[in-house]
Length: 479
Image (cartoon, rainbow, N blue to C red; front, side, top):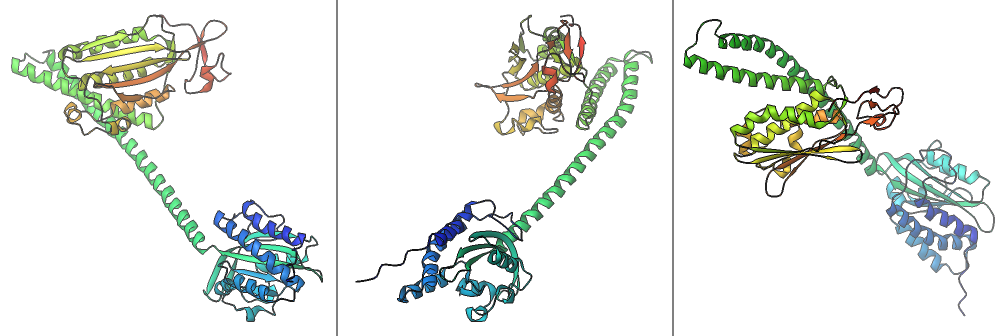
């Protein structure tokens, strides 16, 4: 009758389970030296589970030395072919198994290391992290344990230092006492190469960001200086044109009057462009100052309608306004928000064909008033809906090119609205046209009935009352 195979010891299986399970743990049970911040990947964990199961049979046979040697020899041969560099150190701290993968990695054969302790193995030496870890595990009074660390050793086969992740597992030796240590190594050369490439790419990206930031700063500074220097002579030119138009310098012929009107109109347009450049430069430099106050939108919209009325008439456009008189007070900078409405309406008028419609709608919500400006124009290419808010960007559509400009209007609108704690949203309307929208925070009243006005971009501006650094109490503005 065939004898039953020997039962594996419970301490041995516990140690092997620790070896397999360590692939799932963030840190070892105890550690001695080395960098312990590296983890094992899921692929390594699976292989360690397999190795642990196989080693169970091998070590039990090594410890009890059954009479039948064929299964033991087969297991040892199989372990020699496992693709993981693997070694087993016996109670005397000499290798009883040094598989082929370990030989290929270290350049040392089993015969060359069979009689050596860890400190005498040329690949490790007396001062390496792996040697210290093996000695620490062997000398620790605890019967079981495992250690995971990153280390380096010199490979005679590769003729270079090799970074590895080492896993060491100690299990009790059956019979005579002592312990055995299982050592597996994972070559990190490829991982280190990828890490170095990542660090180099990150450094290059950071350098590029710094250079771009410096270029952007120089661009803003250049725009501010040029705009300021150009506005100075333009003021003089416009002043003399106005003086000529008043005929204080002498009478003008009809042809001269027409030429003067064209010159004044273009000088005014140039003045607007330079003003936009200066505003953008100040905004990008963080030098744009806001003066917030509680106000209803109705009076502001009436003033804006009077300004754009001639442009609407020239293109036979219809503008409707839906702004209930009982809209709540909102926190805004009047001059800045006036720019927002004028820029949005200017865009709508430019890109709406003659006979089209434009609408302004304001709706109150719990914490804000939502504003929309819609038109029946050509719309914005879907790919450009966000890009048109970038400075100097202009869509390639032919209508945009014909309308002219520098592409600053929506960029200035966006920056002003950010200063109001909101942003500009753009979308194309079904059937044609564009919808531009934003929200303004409702002004809060303090216990005295006065409005508490602060920076709408800060949380304190939404609370009643704000903290000592929040805002100041002001009486309601006349509506």
